[in-house]
Structure formats: C-alpha cells, structure tokens
Image (cartoon, rainbow, N blue to C red; front, side, top):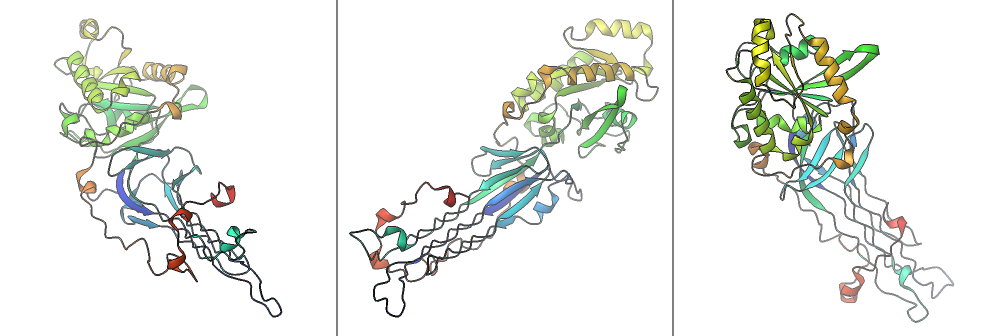
Length: 396
C-alpha cells in the first residue's frame, strides 16, 4: 500500500490567518493643531477553504503538503487606511471528501460537488482603529483593537467514492471480474485473495444511453470490523453508495451464512448501512445446472432480490442490470446530502500511521507584532477585546 497513488485518508494541520491590529494614529497637518484620531482598521486574516475538484481522484497531494497556513492581515494605518487582508488558502480536494477533527473524531464538513467551497477555518477579524471610538466625551481615544487570533486545527480528510452501486463480498468472489465485464475498468484479477488492493470505479452502460457508476472495494473477511484484512480500511467508500450488491460465489458451502457474515461486518462498521437497499448476486453460476439452482434458491433470504450470474458467459448479467437500475432509480434510494450522517472517527475507523504523524509547526503568534503600530500596553483595557460590531464587512 505504501507505493500506491490512491490515498483516501490523510491528516493535515491547518491555521487561518490572524487579523491585523487597528491603528492608533492622529491626523497631523500644518495649521491643524488638533486633527483628531484617524487610525484605520486592520485587515482580516486569510481563510482556509476547501474546494471540490472533479479532476482529482486521490488525496495524494495533501500527503506531501501537510501544513496549510493562511496569510495574516496587515495592521491599519493613518488616514483611516485599512490594512491588507491576509491571503486565503484554498485546498483542492476530490468530490466526496469528508473532514473530521483529528482530536475528537467529530464530523466537521464535507465537499460533494465540483467547484463547491466550504470554509474550514475562518480568518481572524481585523481590529478597529481608534477613530471608531471617538465621541463627544472622548475626543482623543488613545487605544485601538488588536486583531482576532488565528484558528489552528489538525483535521483528518477521508475520501468516500461517489458511486451508485457498491460491490461487497469476500476475496475471490468475482467482484473485479464483474466490474471488468460490465464497464471499461480494468482492475487486477488473479486467483489469490486480496488481489484488489484499492477501490476501483467503473461506468456501467444501460439501455437507452443510460449509465450508472459501480465501485469495487477490497474483499471483506470475517472480523474486518475488528481490524482484520483490508476491507475495513475501504468500507468507508460504500457509505456513499445508494445500493449495495452482495456477491457470494456459487461454490460457497453456505451462501446464506456468508451473506449474513458480510451483513454483520457492515453493521458493526456503520449501522446506517442497514438502511440501504441490498441485492444478492450468486457469482460463478456457470458451474451450476438448473437442478442445483433450484436447490439453492429456497435457502436464500426471502426478502432479498437475488440473481444467478456468470461474468464469463454473461449469464444473468442483463437481469442484474435491470434489478440494479430499478433500485437506483427508486425514490427511497436517492441520496440526499443532508440525510447522510457520517459516523465519528474512533479506534476502528482510524489509520494508525496517519494518527501517529507528528507535525513540526512554527508558532502562530508573533508577540512583537500582535498589537500593531503605536500601541501602548499601559492604555489597554480587557473590556475592549470583544468590542467587534456585528458588521458584514468584518465577516467576509
């Protein structure tokens, strides 16, 4: 896995920009003995913004750029001149990226569409200059506000592939063979377990120039929810799928038992997966005759649509497409983004090598420039710290 370019889990450290300090400046001109305060406002700090990019399919660029720092706002100056805003940092991510807090595992946000922008960390607002505080009883305010501090956070980005149908099955159940026969995808196919080492996507053609997307993940084994095998690491991808296609080979000792084991592992990983519509495909059915098929059918779950298929001979492929298309277009299976609840990250859902990654970050605050020009610490009053007005100009 170390040499793979497909990265779907990465831990990065982000810091927004701090706001610039307001200026404590007074107007000075010839023949104007008492010009009064004219200190400008500080600029806002830069935001950390996530932007969806349909051209990206992996989080690999972030694996080698783990520190994302936005620019700080500049201090205000005389003549009511506002300081320059800090530069925003835009992080391009694949569509389907979910963000979690690295410390608590709490879900923060997600990006699902191309060009969609989500403000991950807000830059600090700039401080107000002293001209904001002048009044009839205080004509010479000798103070200005400092800018708001930066926000610093370590986050985990998970990529969950967007697909209509997700393939679920044990190793060597024929998932990759089915995907290669239905689409132009060419996953590696071999006769040993865990041939599929990373998820694969394929576009399946259907009648009337219609199509749907199918996702293949590494095989699941019993105990995957406890960290065994490779399936647990990639089960996150089927959380986005509208329909789950379970595949059990026809030569299995007990098809119904293997299906129940697969279903149990999915329930342990995320109980909400039980709400998705399921279809059962018995692969490698070219080994069966009509009598064996008649004997197997009564043992299958009665409330579960099933079909006997063979990716080599094409047996049952058209029927499988019809069942899948009917499930995908069912209104009950239409995925609405607000209705998706992402399970929080816990010990079973984390990647150990990413959690143990240690960041070496520079300090976020420069004590020498925190209060801007002409600031007198003797004039500071703690009550001025949160006197930011609710103005849209300071929240852009």
